[in-house]
Each structure stands twice: as C-alpha cells, then as structure tokens.
Length: 562
Ligand SMILES: [Zn+2]
Image (cartoon, rainbow, N blue to C red):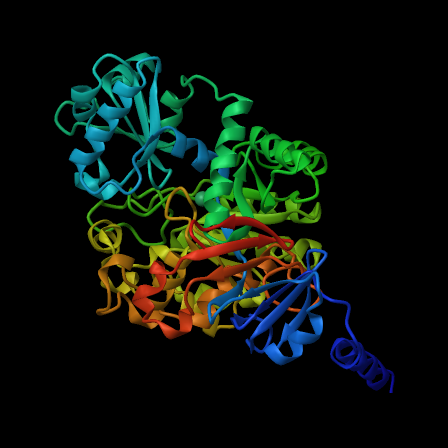
C-alpha cells in the first residue's frame, strides 16, 4: 500500500509540469535529437533548463509550456543533444603542461619528431633543458630510440622527452651524463635502462622508474606552470564536451592547482582526483592520503580516490603477465606489489573509505588487483565502494565475471582497441594469437554483467571521447574508414559506447544522480553535437564536432561559427 501511495505521489509530481502552468524555463532547447541516456535509453525533442538544472525533458509540443517572454530558446534544427561527457581516466595537468612544452603528439615519423625537437630547441634558446613528450613508441624499432638521434639535433643541452604512453622516456647523451648514468649503473628495481646490446652503454631509452634517474634533475615546475597546464587541459576538455574528469594520479601540487582554480571559479569541470600512492611505502601512506583528501575539497573538487600502479605496459614488457612474453625467455614483466602487500594496502584503503583506482594492464596485474579488492571486501565487508581497475588490456577469461561479482568497475580506454601498430607489431607478437584474443575484452565484461566506464588516459591518447566511442564500435583506427574490425568479438554497440562516457562515468564518480544523463532534476551538463551519431556511419563518429558545452547550464565552450 505504502508503495502504491508513493507511486501516485511521484506520478503527480512528475505530471505537475505538464498539467499545471510551469514557471518558464531560462533556457529551452527545441527540435533536437535528444539522446537522454536514461534507464530506458529514451529519446526526446526538447529540454528545459533553469538554475543550472534540467527542469523539463519531452516533446516539442510540451516544451511550449516552458517558454516565457524571457526564455532563451535554442532551435537545434535536428542536431544532437547529449549529456556532457565524463572522462574516467585522464591526466589533465601533466598533459596540459606537456602540451605547452615540446609537444610531439601525433607526429607520424621519427624524422618529424626530430625536426620538432630541433625547432623547439631553436625557439627556446633560454631553456636549460629541452623537455616535453608525446613521441610514439612505434616510430622506433622495438620502441627504442637512440640517444645518438637526439644528439644530432640537440648536442649542447640536456633533452628528456616522455613517450606518449607515459612509461618510457628518451634522453640525449648530455642528459644521461648529467644523471651519471653509465654502463655501470644498475637498473632500478622497477625500471630498465635500455642498453646497446654490443657495448652495454645506455642507449637513450629509459623505462618506468629508470626515467626518474634523469627526471629528478629537471628544473622544478612552478605553481604557475601547474595553473597554466590545468587551464590548457580544461580548454581542450570543454572543447570535446567533457565536464567531468577523473584525475588519474594526483600529486599535492596538482591538487593545489585544482583547488586554486575551484576557489577562483575557473574550474570548468567537476574533478574527482585519485591521489597517487607510492606502492613502496604502502600502508604507511595512509595518514598523508587522509590529510590530502580532507584538505582538497571544494565546489567541484573531490579527492576521494587513490591510485595504485599494479604494473607497467605490455609493449615494453613491464606489464605483469601470467605466462612469459614470447621470445624473451621466462620474462613475465613486473608486478609492483607482492600479492600480500597489495591485499594489505587495498584492505587498509578500503577501510578508510577510499575509492581505489588501479592501473593494471597484464593478466597477472589484473588478477592481483581483483584479488586485492576481494581481500578488502572479505576483511571489511561489502560496501558501495565502486573501486575500479583502469586499462585492462589483457584479462584472463576466468577473471572476466569477477568484475560483476566484486562490484568493481571496469575502466577501459576503448581507443586503444583499434588494431594499430602498437597492437599488431609490439603487443600481439609478444602474446601470440591465443592470448591476444583476450585483449580489451569490453564486450565480454559487459556480457558478464560488469559495469564499464570509459576514459582517454590523455595525454597518452586523444582526449576526444568521440574517438573512443568510434573505436569501441568499429575496432579500427579512426582515420582509416570502414573495413574489417580488429578482434570483432569485443566490439560494442553505440548506446553502450556512449553510456561508458556518460552514465557509466557518472556511476564511477558517485554522481549518477547528478550527471551522466538528461533527466529532470539533474545538473544541466549538456553538449550539442553537429550531427546525430546514430544516423552516420560509425567510421565517421570522430568527425562529429561538439558545438557547445554546458556545465550547470552555463556555456563553457562554444565552437567558432556556431
Ligand atoms: Zn593513466
């Protein structure tokens, strides 16, 4: 009975707007292809916004009641209206700072990279170091560029350039000499100094923690650098329709920059930060993490997450795998944590109410992560924790149903499932065809009832969610056009791909009552797209453009000419 009464009340309340005379909305979109991403994945024609919130969703005829003399009416002319996007794994500030330095993203040949480095060095004669990044591993044999190449273009100053995947860097001779790295220098425990196979001399590429041997010498970045990096990242994010960002590995400097922007009213995205945990320090990190979590909270900023790196990446064999990499003896990569330590750390963090965000790429790293989260649940009891594992490149089939069972969100970067040279030339040969079948098994996780959320890992890959959506659907590199899909078993449908960047991300952020779909009562975080994604060939999704991005009803981006 009680349930029936509540049902009636809700129905009357929701009909109230249509039956009575609603107060006019401040803003009404009409004649749109409104894909709401609500539970029924329903479509609408019109949306009303007042006080930063969605007050009406429905037909064009019903919208008329919400239009008053001072209402701003936007006729969408059939264009698409979507909930604004969530990026569930992104590095805004480091990416933004990188974009302002020697930016090598998207360059197609080693020659172009070297020309860009030379041009940057010439344009910045004052720079004591040439720093930046974004070079593509696949442009160099085995992802292993030499110091000699860099020495040719910058012989006199130290150079350190991060690879686009963030797990390797490339140094010239001057930088290696300043760091004192010689033939005699041992590899750090969680890193590798690439060496000339004949002479044993460091050859220029540094993996994982070995990068730190040189990067510790770089001049410190200033708060102004962080602020500029954030500003740049927010411009890019808003331009791609993003208004919610899951910061994937925050330092205190980064948290400060977010907090300053939040206080100044310039933080044009909701930021949920995962604070970086030093896995070597393990459980002793807790007091610091709790301190940062309570200190950095604001209108649009939370730091309720912690980030644990379980392993490295497959391309350079630093990801932890269950069976050896093919062609490298018994090499199974490296897990950053012993299982017992991982479980103790996850249990302690879970007990303190942190949301655990894990980087795990190899099947062993992923299994260890799920084991750690399972141990936490056993010790502390089940709670609505929404821990998540990001990247999930190679999952052993028995681990696929565990996401659902443990309530762990599968945080994929679907853009990576594009069958590019990273996969065909570096990854698949190391794994063989049988294991490669289980690369990026997004469809399998969904079929097993798991919740997925999607992100870019920018600046590793394009921040544009439309690139990720297209690849999730096509399993092809976006500019290639239609053709056979790489690993077609794991392609997903467009509604699921959009959900991963909207309501899935909102769920991951504990904000599904606030964002992620177009429903009455939610924040008016909305985007206008120049075309309806359901009416174009999937291979053209990346060509679609965001025309306008609204955060709480206020426009934070508008395309030129719109
Ligand atoms: Zn990342």
